[in-house]
Length: 354
Image 1 (cartoon, rainbow, N blue to C red):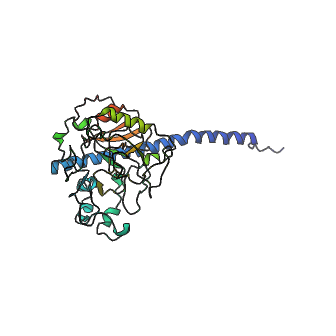
Image 2 (image 1 turned 45 degrees about the horizontal axis):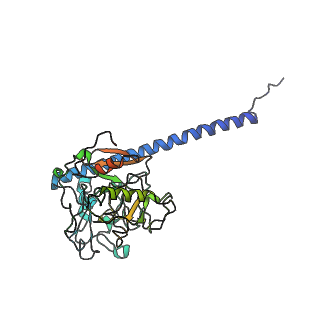
Image 3 (image 1 turned 120 degrees about the vertical axis):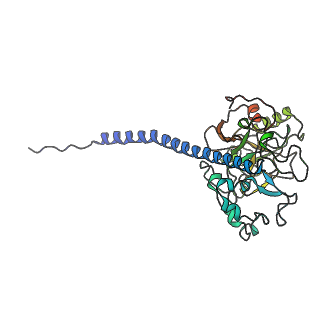
């Protein structure tokens, strides 16, 4: 008598397939979480490298790097008025990028001819430095002709209170603004461990297309909104009103500009958001351009709200002036967020407040 061969029944096969499907469904989120944890760890390491570079820069020069530095008529004769050399250029030697620094001609600037080719600095401007990129963003480029960056310097708290109150601020050759000029470590009187130096921002959108606030790209854009004009007035109440109005914008609101963040790592503009952020709106909230105060400059943000943003779940990484990096949650208290944004505001911030 022949022995019957056993085989899977259809029901058994379906059960096995269902079990495998459940295991995959359980495993995929864990894999994605592990990958994001690795990306977030790399982002933290990048910010630590920036913090170390700044400390080495201070040891050599004596002051923090400027957000941008200009002669008041543009950095060189063939550039647009007001554009200056951005802080990443200043610390290239401390980032083990001496060759790039040596290759940059500071007598020429950064714009290629017709935004294509033709400038002696094209090699540097087009270069993409890995330390300046957060791997969680995906490294889109707001401009195809220039290297981008995710890390922004902190220029301070709300403009209605006091502008340029952060540690990495503009060189003001025109004498237009209070509180500007070189910042040494001794000027960070709130303490280097309580003063933010850098955070992150998702890069802008190539072409600057208008996007909805509630879309996936809403955190990459500015939204125009009228606001107070009382600059440097210690007006915390006015700042809070503007912040509340910004947060209340409907989700269907269309952006005014979406290409500005991370536009070009080599350059800066004293009131533009290409390479800087502020401590006004808490992390991952809406960026609002104060159209009343700054109607002539669609990128201007000295009186606007420019919070850091990221694809990390629940917050952003922040590099402090002592070189440490901490994860600050979206839910951080507004007053605490303002406090760690200023270098000499006299606030007392508990170590467990963020």
